Every structure is written in structure tokens, then in C-alpha cells.
Picture (spheres, rainbow, N blue to C red):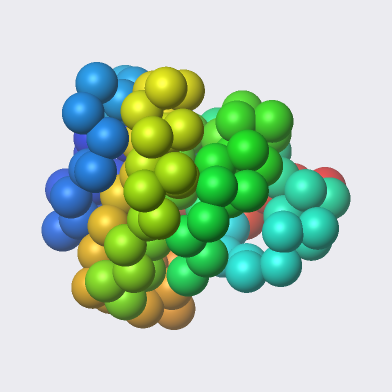
Length: 115
């Protein structure tokens, strides 16, 4: 599944104009502890979080994730949005909870990362 397909599935909006919406999603994840995400992040991951600071973008880029999904209407900090634009990293925004998003991703065949 591509990020653009996931965006439609989640009824989300992309906050980063020019982002790579064709990136393939390899797995899904939900976590708000950055060190934990660093330990378990994967190439192509779609990451759900309530964190909105610039370190979220740094971790996503470092791990070569497909996108970040900000849940429950959380908005990115301005520095985060600027960094995501610079990196062409999609930030999807939705009112749905992380629980709802994970359920939808799982039902669509996006599985947790393989360790």
C-alpha cells in the first residue's frame, strides 16, 4: 500500500506539500517513546504518534519511514513541519485515535514490524 492509499483509508490529510505520497508502506506502528521507536523502526513504516516535535521527523528520516501519522487532531510544531517539507516526508493528520488507525491498517493488511 502507498502512503496516498493509507491517507484515503484513514480519511487523513497530508500536511506536507510535495511529500512522497508514492512511498510503499512496509508495516505499521504506534508508539510515543522515541527511544523505543528508534529501536523498532523499520524502512517504510507508517508511524502513529501524538508527538509533534522535530525529533519525530528526525527519527522518521533516520529510520527511512514512509510517513508519520499524527493522531487525534494533533498539529505538528512549525519546526517539525518545516523539516518534514525539507525531507519530503508525509505527515498525515487525522482525528482518529491510534487504536482506530492500527485497527484499520491491520484490516488492510499492514502488519506490525518483523523483528
